[in-house]
Image (cartoon, rainbow, N blue to C red):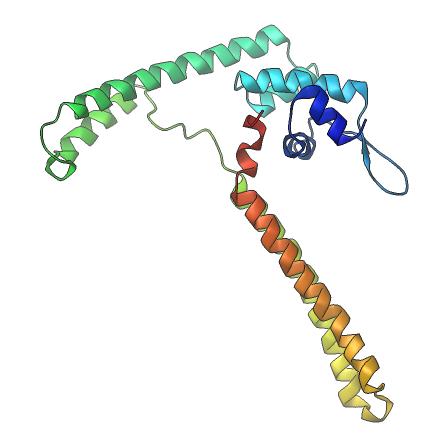
Length: 217
C-alpha cells in the first residue's frame, strides 16, 4: 500500500506516519530502484495500535515496548494509569491555586508573589508537579541535525569552489573558457542555494508542529 492509501485506511496523516517511521515504530518496505515506501497489512495494523495508544497519551517508549513484546498490554496500561492519576492530582492542585488567585481582589502587580511561590514550592516538596517537566521537546534536536547536515554539505561545496579557484590562480593558462567556468562555479553555488532553501523549509516544518504531529488525527 502507498502512504495515501494508509492515510485513508487508518485515519492518520502522512506526516504522522512518517513521524512514527522516524521514531522506529514502523518500518515499511522500500521498493528497489525508486525507494518508495510500500506499507504492508502488518504495518497498517501496527499503525492502528499506535493510534489507539497515542489517543490515550501513552508515551512512545511505552508503545514501543508493548509492540515489541517487552511488556504486556496490562503492564503498559498499569504504568499509564499511574501517570494519568498523578497528572490528575497535579491538575487538581493547579486548579485549586488558580481558584485561589481568582479570588484575589487586586491586579497581578499587587499580588504577593513571594508568598504564593512559597506555597507552590511547599506543595512541590510534597510531590506535586505543576509543570510536566518529563515531556521533552525534540524540535531543537531536529533543527540542530538539519543545520549540521546543511553546514557539512555547504562546506563541501565551498571547498570544491576553493579548489577550482586555486587551480585557476595556479595555472591561469589552462583556465577553461568563460562559459564553462561560469557553469563550473554555478553548479556548486546552485547546490548551496538549494540546500539553504531545503534547510529553511525543514526548519519551518519542524517549528510548525512536527513535535505534536502525532496528536493530529
